Image (tube, rainbow, N blue to C red):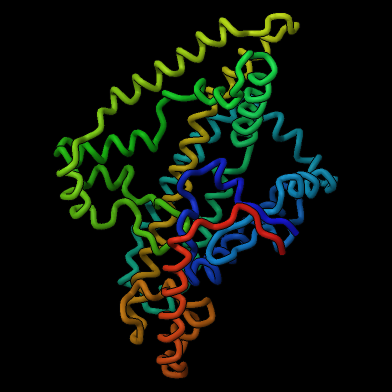
Length: 370
Protein backbone atom coordinates (compact mmCIF):
# COMPACT_ATOMS: atom_id res chain seq x y z
CA UNK A 1 0.00 0.00 0.00
CA UNK A 2 1.27 3.45 -0.96
CA UNK A 3 0.88 6.31 1.51
CA UNK A 4 1.54 9.99 0.82
CA UNK A 5 1.90 13.34 2.55
CA UNK A 6 1.08 15.30 -0.60
CA UNK A 7 -2.37 16.49 0.62
CA UNK A 8 -0.64 18.21 3.54
CA UNK A 9 2.04 19.79 1.36
CA UNK A 10 -0.55 21.06 -1.12
CA UNK A 11 -3.14 22.44 1.31
CA UNK A 12 -1.15 23.53 4.33
CA UNK A 13 2.18 25.09 5.04
CA UNK A 14 2.05 24.40 8.77
CA UNK A 15 0.03 21.29 9.66
CA UNK A 16 2.15 18.37 10.96
CA UNK A 17 5.43 20.10 10.21
CA UNK A 18 6.51 18.82 13.62
CA UNK A 19 5.87 15.17 14.52
CA UNK A 20 2.98 14.07 16.66
CA UNK A 21 3.75 12.99 20.20
CA UNK A 22 2.96 9.61 21.76
CA UNK A 23 -0.17 11.07 23.34
CA UNK A 24 -1.34 12.49 20.01
CA UNK A 25 -0.76 9.19 18.23
CA UNK A 26 -2.21 6.76 20.78
CA UNK A 27 -5.02 8.76 22.38
CA UNK A 28 -6.00 12.01 20.74
CA UNK A 29 -5.97 11.03 17.07
CA UNK A 30 -7.61 7.58 17.45
CA UNK A 31 -10.47 9.07 19.51
CA UNK A 32 -10.88 12.00 17.12
CA UNK A 33 -10.85 9.78 14.02
CA UNK A 34 -13.37 7.37 15.51
CA UNK A 35 -15.66 10.32 16.23
CA UNK A 36 -15.26 11.65 12.68
CA UNK A 37 -15.91 8.19 11.19
CA UNK A 38 -19.06 7.96 13.30
CA UNK A 39 -20.26 11.32 12.04
CA UNK A 40 -19.58 10.36 8.42
CA UNK A 41 -21.60 7.17 8.85
CA UNK A 42 -24.38 9.16 10.52
CA UNK A 43 -24.54 12.00 8.00
CA UNK A 44 -23.76 10.16 4.76
CA UNK A 45 -24.29 6.49 5.45
CA UNK A 46 -20.74 5.77 4.29
CA UNK A 47 -18.67 3.12 6.00
CA UNK A 48 -15.08 4.20 6.54
CA UNK A 49 -12.15 1.82 6.68
CA UNK A 50 -10.32 1.95 9.97
CA UNK A 51 -6.94 2.52 8.35
CA UNK A 52 -7.51 5.75 6.44
CA UNK A 53 -4.36 7.44 7.66
CA UNK A 54 -0.99 6.11 8.68
CA UNK A 55 1.37 7.70 11.21
CA UNK A 56 5.08 6.97 10.89
CA UNK A 57 7.63 8.61 13.18
CA UNK A 58 4.98 11.15 14.14
CA UNK A 59 4.15 12.18 10.57
CA UNK A 60 0.74 11.69 8.96
CA UNK A 61 0.29 9.90 5.65
CA UNK A 62 -2.83 9.38 3.53
CA UNK A 63 -3.98 6.85 0.99
CA UNK A 64 -3.95 8.06 -2.63
CA UNK A 65 -6.84 10.45 -3.28
CA UNK A 66 -8.32 8.03 -5.83
CA UNK A 67 -8.84 5.48 -3.05
CA UNK A 68 -11.12 7.87 -1.19
CA UNK A 69 -13.13 8.67 -4.30
CA UNK A 70 -13.59 4.99 -5.18
CA UNK A 71 -14.64 4.22 -1.63
CA UNK A 72 -17.41 6.83 -1.89
CA UNK A 73 -18.76 6.14 -5.37
CA UNK A 74 -19.09 2.41 -4.73
CA UNK A 75 -21.38 2.97 -1.76
CA UNK A 76 -24.89 3.53 -3.20
CA UNK A 77 -26.24 4.97 0.06
CA UNK A 78 -24.16 8.10 -0.55
CA UNK A 79 -26.28 9.07 -3.55
CA UNK A 80 -29.36 9.47 -1.40
CA UNK A 81 -27.58 12.42 0.27
CA UNK A 82 -26.72 14.20 -2.99
CA UNK A 83 -30.09 16.01 -3.42
CA UNK A 84 -29.62 17.56 0.01
CA UNK A 85 -26.17 18.86 -0.97
CA UNK A 86 -27.41 20.25 -4.28
CA UNK A 87 -30.30 21.98 -2.53
CA UNK A 88 -27.84 23.83 -0.28
CA UNK A 89 -25.85 25.35 -3.15
CA UNK A 90 -27.35 28.84 -2.95
CA UNK A 91 -26.61 29.35 0.73
CA UNK A 92 -23.51 27.22 1.31
CA UNK A 93 -21.32 30.17 2.36
CA UNK A 94 -24.00 31.52 4.69
CA UNK A 95 -24.22 28.06 6.23
CA UNK A 96 -20.46 28.09 6.85
CA UNK A 97 -20.67 31.49 8.55
CA UNK A 98 -23.48 30.20 10.77
CA UNK A 99 -21.43 27.13 11.67
CA UNK A 100 -18.51 29.37 12.67
CA UNK A 101 -20.80 31.39 14.93
CA UNK A 102 -22.13 28.25 16.61
CA UNK A 103 -18.62 26.81 16.98
CA UNK A 104 -17.25 29.94 18.68
CA UNK A 105 -20.20 30.05 21.07
CA UNK A 106 -19.72 26.41 22.05
CA UNK A 107 -15.94 26.82 22.28
CA UNK A 108 -16.42 29.74 24.65
CA UNK A 109 -18.55 27.51 26.88
CA UNK A 110 -15.98 24.71 26.81
CA UNK A 111 -13.13 27.09 27.66
CA UNK A 112 -15.02 28.36 30.70
CA UNK A 113 -14.59 24.96 32.35
CA UNK A 114 -11.64 25.32 34.71
CA UNK A 115 -9.59 22.07 34.67
CA UNK A 116 -8.14 22.92 38.08
CA UNK A 117 -11.59 22.70 39.65
CA UNK A 118 -12.15 19.08 38.53
CA UNK A 119 -11.15 15.90 40.31
CA UNK A 120 -8.53 13.86 38.47
CA UNK A 121 -11.04 11.31 37.17
CA UNK A 122 -13.45 14.02 36.05
CA UNK A 123 -10.57 15.89 34.46
CA UNK A 124 -9.70 12.80 32.42
CA UNK A 125 -13.34 12.48 31.34
CA UNK A 126 -13.33 16.17 30.44
CA UNK A 127 -10.20 15.62 28.36
CA UNK A 128 -11.88 12.86 26.35
CA UNK A 129 -14.95 15.04 25.84
CA UNK A 130 -13.00 18.03 24.51
CA UNK A 131 -11.12 15.73 22.12
CA UNK A 132 -14.51 14.60 20.75
CA UNK A 133 -15.72 18.21 20.72
CA UNK A 134 -12.73 19.24 18.61
CA UNK A 135 -13.25 16.32 16.20
CA UNK A 136 -16.94 17.14 15.87
CA UNK A 137 -16.25 20.71 14.82
CA UNK A 138 -13.37 19.84 12.51
CA UNK A 139 -15.86 17.56 10.76
CA UNK A 140 -18.64 20.16 10.70
CA UNK A 141 -16.40 22.91 9.37
CA UNK A 142 -14.95 20.60 6.73
CA UNK A 143 -18.26 18.92 5.90
CA UNK A 144 -20.94 20.26 3.62
CA UNK A 145 -21.25 22.05 0.34
CA UNK A 146 -19.03 25.01 1.29
CA UNK A 147 -16.04 22.63 1.23
CA UNK A 148 -17.18 20.90 -1.96
CA UNK A 149 -17.62 24.26 -3.68
CA UNK A 150 -14.22 25.48 -2.54
CA UNK A 151 -12.36 22.46 -3.92
CA UNK A 152 -14.56 22.18 -7.01
CA UNK A 153 -14.36 25.86 -7.97
CA UNK A 154 -10.59 26.09 -7.55
CA UNK A 155 -10.03 22.81 -9.42
CA UNK A 156 -12.20 24.00 -12.30
CA UNK A 157 -10.44 27.36 -12.36
CA UNK A 158 -7.04 25.66 -12.41
CA UNK A 159 -8.09 23.41 -15.31
CA UNK A 160 -9.64 26.24 -17.31
CA UNK A 161 -6.56 28.41 -16.79
CA UNK A 162 -4.33 25.68 -18.24
CA UNK A 163 -6.73 25.19 -21.16
CA UNK A 164 -7.65 28.78 -22.01
CA UNK A 165 -4.64 30.93 -21.06
CA UNK A 166 -1.38 30.99 -22.99
CA UNK A 167 0.88 30.70 -19.95
CA UNK A 168 3.85 28.26 -19.71
CA UNK A 169 3.27 28.10 -15.93
CA UNK A 170 -0.37 27.07 -15.25
CA UNK A 171 0.12 27.39 -11.48
CA UNK A 172 0.00 31.17 -11.97
CA UNK A 173 -3.78 30.84 -11.71
CA UNK A 174 -3.28 31.11 -7.93
CA UNK A 175 -2.38 34.81 -8.32
CA UNK A 176 -6.03 35.41 -9.18
CA UNK A 177 -7.01 34.35 -5.64
CA UNK A 178 -4.71 36.54 -3.54
CA UNK A 179 -5.25 39.87 -1.80
CA UNK A 180 -8.60 39.01 -0.25
CA UNK A 181 -9.24 39.35 3.51
CA UNK A 182 -9.06 36.27 5.74
CA UNK A 183 -8.89 35.44 9.45
CA UNK A 184 -5.23 34.41 9.48
CA UNK A 185 -4.11 37.73 8.02
CA UNK A 186 -6.50 39.56 10.34
CA UNK A 187 -5.09 37.70 13.37
CA UNK A 188 -1.48 38.51 12.43
CA UNK A 189 -2.39 42.16 12.05
CA UNK A 190 -4.16 42.15 15.43
CA UNK A 191 -1.11 40.63 17.14
CA UNK A 192 1.05 43.52 15.98
CA UNK A 193 -1.60 45.92 17.25
CA UNK A 194 -1.13 44.31 20.68
CA UNK A 195 2.65 44.68 20.39
CA UNK A 196 2.14 48.38 19.61
CA UNK A 197 -0.39 48.79 22.47
CA UNK A 198 -3.21 49.52 20.03
CA UNK A 199 -5.27 46.50 21.09
CA UNK A 200 -5.77 44.99 24.54
CA UNK A 201 -4.39 41.56 25.42
CA UNK A 202 -7.82 40.41 26.51
CA UNK A 203 -9.52 41.37 23.27
CA UNK A 204 -6.80 39.76 21.20
CA UNK A 205 -6.95 36.49 23.16
CA UNK A 206 -10.73 36.29 22.95
CA UNK A 207 -10.69 36.75 19.17
CA UNK A 208 -7.51 35.11 17.96
CA UNK A 209 -5.26 33.85 20.74
CA UNK A 210 -6.20 30.24 21.24
CA UNK A 211 -5.38 28.68 17.91
CA UNK A 212 -2.70 26.08 17.38
CA UNK A 213 0.18 26.45 14.95
CA UNK A 214 0.66 22.72 14.33
CA UNK A 215 -1.11 19.39 14.73
CA UNK A 216 0.81 18.31 17.83
CA UNK A 217 -0.44 19.18 21.30
CA UNK A 218 3.14 19.64 22.46
CA UNK A 219 3.44 22.94 20.64
CA UNK A 220 2.06 26.00 22.41
CA UNK A 221 -1.02 27.73 21.08
CA UNK A 222 -0.61 31.35 20.03
CA UNK A 223 -2.02 32.87 23.22
CA UNK A 224 0.27 31.06 25.65
CA UNK A 225 3.16 33.08 27.10
CA UNK A 226 1.77 36.10 25.29
CA UNK A 227 3.75 38.65 27.31
CA UNK A 228 7.03 36.92 26.49
CA UNK A 229 6.16 36.89 22.79
CA UNK A 230 5.20 40.55 22.88
CA UNK A 231 8.57 41.49 24.37
CA UNK A 232 10.38 39.55 21.65
CA UNK A 233 8.40 41.14 18.82
CA UNK A 234 8.81 44.65 20.23
CA UNK A 235 12.43 44.39 19.07
CA UNK A 236 11.33 43.62 15.50
CA UNK A 237 10.01 46.08 12.94
CA UNK A 238 6.29 45.61 12.37
CA UNK A 239 5.19 44.44 8.92
CA UNK A 240 3.40 46.96 6.74
CA UNK A 241 0.10 45.11 6.39
CA UNK A 242 -1.42 47.74 4.12
CA UNK A 243 1.55 47.39 1.79
CA UNK A 244 1.29 43.60 1.85
CA UNK A 245 -2.36 43.83 0.86
CA UNK A 246 -1.57 46.38 -1.83
CA UNK A 247 1.23 44.25 -3.30
CA UNK A 248 -1.02 41.16 -3.37
CA UNK A 249 -3.79 43.16 -5.02
CA UNK A 250 -1.37 44.50 -7.63
CA UNK A 251 -0.16 40.98 -8.40
CA UNK A 252 -3.76 39.88 -8.85
CA UNK A 253 -4.50 42.77 -11.20
CA UNK A 254 -1.36 42.07 -13.24
CA UNK A 255 -2.50 38.48 -13.66
CA UNK A 256 -5.94 39.69 -14.76
CA UNK A 257 -4.28 41.97 -17.31
CA UNK A 258 -2.09 39.10 -18.51
CA UNK A 259 -5.19 36.95 -19.02
CA UNK A 260 -6.90 39.62 -21.11
CA UNK A 261 -3.91 39.67 -23.45
CA UNK A 262 -3.33 35.91 -23.56
CA UNK A 263 -6.81 34.43 -23.62
CA UNK A 264 -7.51 31.74 -26.23
CA UNK A 265 -10.69 33.27 -27.55
CA UNK A 266 -11.24 30.56 -30.15
CA UNK A 267 -12.74 28.30 -27.47
CA UNK A 268 -16.57 28.65 -27.64
CA UNK A 269 -17.97 30.28 -24.48
CA UNK A 270 -14.49 29.95 -22.94
CA UNK A 271 -14.37 33.41 -21.42
CA UNK A 272 -17.85 33.04 -19.94
CA UNK A 273 -16.99 29.70 -18.31
CA UNK A 274 -13.69 31.07 -17.03
CA UNK A 275 -15.26 34.18 -15.48
CA UNK A 276 -17.93 32.12 -13.72
CA UNK A 277 -15.34 29.71 -12.34
CA UNK A 278 -13.19 32.62 -11.18
CA UNK A 279 -16.11 34.36 -9.46
CA UNK A 280 -17.06 31.16 -7.60
CA UNK A 281 -13.46 30.42 -6.58
CA UNK A 282 -13.08 33.95 -5.23
CA UNK A 283 -16.31 33.68 -3.30
CA UNK A 284 -15.04 30.58 -1.50
CA UNK A 285 -11.37 31.47 -1.13
CA UNK A 286 -12.10 33.02 2.28
CA UNK A 287 -13.80 29.78 3.32
CA UNK A 288 -10.59 27.90 2.49
CA UNK A 289 -8.41 30.28 4.49
CA UNK A 290 -10.79 30.80 7.40
CA UNK A 291 -11.33 27.08 7.93
CA UNK A 292 -7.60 26.72 8.59
CA UNK A 293 -7.95 29.35 11.31
CA UNK A 294 -10.98 27.83 13.03
CA UNK A 295 -9.82 24.21 12.72
CA UNK A 296 -7.07 24.80 15.24
CA UNK A 297 -8.95 26.64 17.98
CA UNK A 298 -10.27 23.44 19.55
CA UNK A 299 -6.69 22.47 20.41
CA UNK A 300 -6.51 24.92 23.30
CA UNK A 301 -8.96 23.25 25.74
CA UNK A 302 -7.36 19.85 24.95
CA UNK A 303 -3.85 21.11 25.67
CA UNK A 304 -5.04 22.94 28.77
CA UNK A 305 -6.65 19.78 30.18
CA UNK A 306 -3.55 17.70 29.33
CA UNK A 307 -1.17 20.04 31.12
CA UNK A 308 -3.37 20.15 34.21
CA UNK A 309 -3.56 16.36 34.23
CA UNK A 310 0.20 16.19 33.71
CA UNK A 311 0.75 18.42 36.74
CA UNK A 312 -1.11 15.83 38.86
CA UNK A 313 0.87 12.79 37.70
CA UNK A 314 3.41 12.70 40.51
CA UNK A 315 6.17 10.83 38.67
CA UNK A 316 6.49 13.23 35.72
CA UNK A 317 9.44 15.60 35.64
CA UNK A 318 7.24 18.30 34.11
CA UNK A 319 3.55 18.49 33.11
CA UNK A 320 4.34 18.41 29.38
CA UNK A 321 5.83 14.92 29.78
CA UNK A 322 2.26 13.66 29.60
CA UNK A 323 2.46 14.20 25.84
CA UNK A 324 4.96 11.31 25.69
CA UNK A 325 2.73 8.84 27.53
CA UNK A 326 0.49 6.31 25.80
CA UNK A 327 -3.26 6.10 26.23
CA UNK A 328 -2.88 3.05 28.50
CA UNK A 329 -0.23 4.72 30.62
CA UNK A 330 -2.31 7.85 31.11
CA UNK A 331 -5.37 5.77 31.97
CA UNK A 332 -3.40 3.74 34.50
CA UNK A 333 -1.96 6.90 36.07
CA UNK A 334 -5.47 8.29 36.52
CA UNK A 335 -7.00 5.08 37.91
CA UNK A 336 -4.25 3.92 40.27
CA UNK A 337 -0.79 5.46 39.99
CA UNK A 338 0.49 3.30 42.87
CA UNK A 339 0.06 0.13 40.81
CA UNK A 340 2.35 1.17 37.95
CA UNK A 341 6.11 1.09 37.57
CA UNK A 342 6.85 4.82 37.63
CA UNK A 343 10.57 4.53 36.96
CA UNK A 344 9.96 2.36 33.91
CA UNK A 345 7.47 4.86 32.47
CA UNK A 346 9.90 7.74 33.11
CA UNK A 347 12.54 5.85 31.12
CA UNK A 348 10.05 5.28 28.27
CA UNK A 349 9.15 8.96 28.26
CA UNK A 350 12.81 9.99 28.07
CA UNK A 351 13.40 7.59 25.16
CA UNK A 352 10.31 8.81 23.29
CA UNK A 353 11.27 12.45 23.76
CA UNK A 354 14.74 11.78 22.38
CA UNK A 355 13.31 9.99 19.35
CA UNK A 356 10.75 12.78 18.85
CA UNK A 357 13.50 15.40 18.89
CA UNK A 358 15.46 13.39 16.29
CA UNK A 359 12.49 13.21 13.91
CA UNK A 360 11.60 16.82 14.62
CA UNK A 361 14.81 17.85 12.83
CA UNK A 362 14.23 15.62 9.80
CA UNK A 363 12.17 16.14 6.67
CA UNK A 364 9.82 13.17 6.37
CA UNK A 365 9.61 11.31 3.04
CA UNK A 366 6.70 12.38 0.85
CA UNK A 367 5.70 8.79 0.07
CA UNK A 368 6.07 5.54 2.04
CA UNK A 369 5.11 1.94 1.33
CA UNK A 370 3.55 -0.54 3.71
